Image: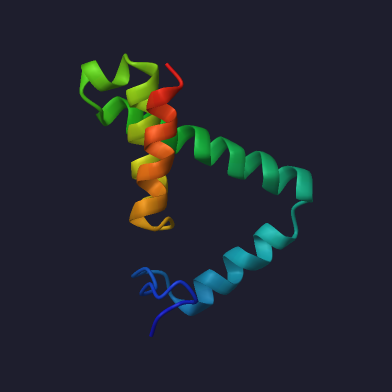
Length: 93
């Protein structure tokens, strides 16, 4: 089964019951708390990606941005759109 983007759903080892319980816990938090959690998780993911990059890429602000874009959004953007954004990022310098 595919989602609306034509992608297969992610595999999970979480039982439906556990997922339901987690959703219930998250819904009990305020919008501010959920937003803060999402922001902190994104920041942590970004730090992990940067740490995995070769030093030459990580130390170059433009190439770091390109690498982050590809890592986070390559499955969500059409390849042509992704390359247009990459070209724009590289022209900014």
